[in-house]
Image (cartoon, rainbow, N blue to C red; front, side, top):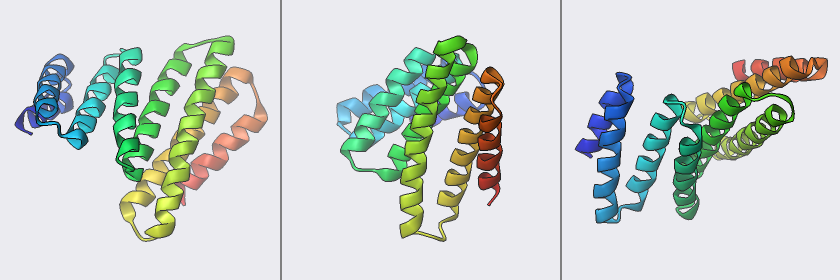
Length: 173
């Protein structure tokens, strides 16, 4: 756990190479211990570093590894988080894309955020007063609004602008 915590300190301070080194070391230890849950968290942390370094293909690889573990553990909160993280990577890729590539990447992003939203909505039905779930769902609405904003700008599409506005308003509810 200490290696992971050190990685987090370096991650927060923006020293991504050092953070990655500690996260990879933490992963090795966790693999030796066969701590599946902790391995999934390591994969997620490594993916976040790659995301910040714009190594987006590597970020996707590690986010998908983390997702696989969360799915195998039937961890709805973790699954929703992974879907959101994968959606964020596709959003960043989509913003850099153009033409059909941009549209395809933004659609992938949207698909993952909608999956996250579905899970968050189900969890909130079971725990209606959970402030963390409300905040996560609000963040997902905002992410979906951002996708529609980006699509609207790229396609000059008024209906997508309206969708963006609606999702951003839902984020405030």
